[in-house]
Image 1 (tube, rainbow, N blue to C red):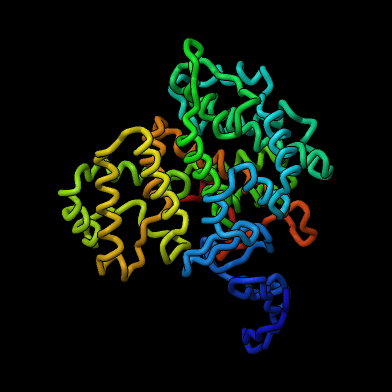
Image 2 (image 1 turned 60 degrees about the horizontal axis):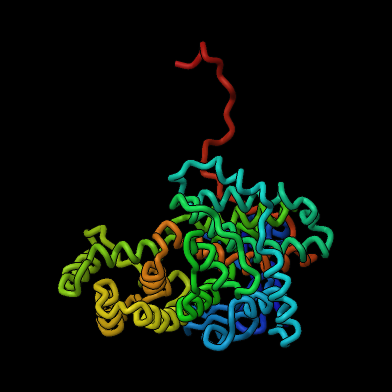
Length: 430
């Protein structure tokens, strides 16, 4: 990483600020000593122009529509790899050899069971509790059940905690789903792969044998790959911020899940599905396009555009293909939601309004339809997102812990409240 400098003229003085250049992507101006040199802070609501860390994990070029995991294009990983291979890549920086992958898969599989007392923990929730509420609580509770891997200063404990999080998240997610629908928990089965095991834990019942559909398993595995990491988004930044205080990894991931729960973040695919259901049929699309273009109408087209991607979301192309594969496998030839989605996509890629504003379909546009077709209720969509993103959170957390330049997060503010004033007793207040 090369470094040069930039000059800032402030309050009659010239200040030299280092400029750092990464492997690819924009340069960054290092303002870490700005306050000490000038007595001033920077102002950047949402930190949209601020790099909070150095990272080797994920790179996004929103203008070009590029997403790389450790340098590998997301399209290649989703097409040729599987989710656990992607987990290994994100955690260790390189794709595994055949022997390394076999060992990693084995270790993850042997950690999928959760402590049996967790069953009683789940019984404390109301039957109608939202699965994401259950996930926030149960993941945070893991630190009470696995306190032998909460010492973040011990590399061995960090590795064990990482493995446990990746392995146990599908089990907890399936338990949250089963609890919400009033069915008994299904234990993991070690002869199944990661995603097939999860599908079985969600949809198997004790009274009959469950056979995993390989097309659905592969489709869900691909969805997990697409959601595994996405640079310094809100939930990942939350995990890093929580981790900067020295909190244990289970608590940090629970914080990330809580942030992901927000509709502007992890709930976007559910919102896109609800929008397609509201439109209903392709003939009603022009009416809703007109509403979207009307500045005075509160209606917004969900699943279009992205805060980062100013081009076609690379994950959306893969999801479009995956959606068709799932619907064809399930015999859904004439799905009204898909008809609306396809027609909307064609309009978005040709309509001058969409092109001018760069409102291209994003991953949420198709993922909601796919998950619904698989049998997941909308309340589980964000849970599946959290399951997939856990490895990204863990990789980012581990990188932060091992980075000697990282300190506890402490954003500053522009204070606009009352200046200093003196206390007045109650009797003297008019």
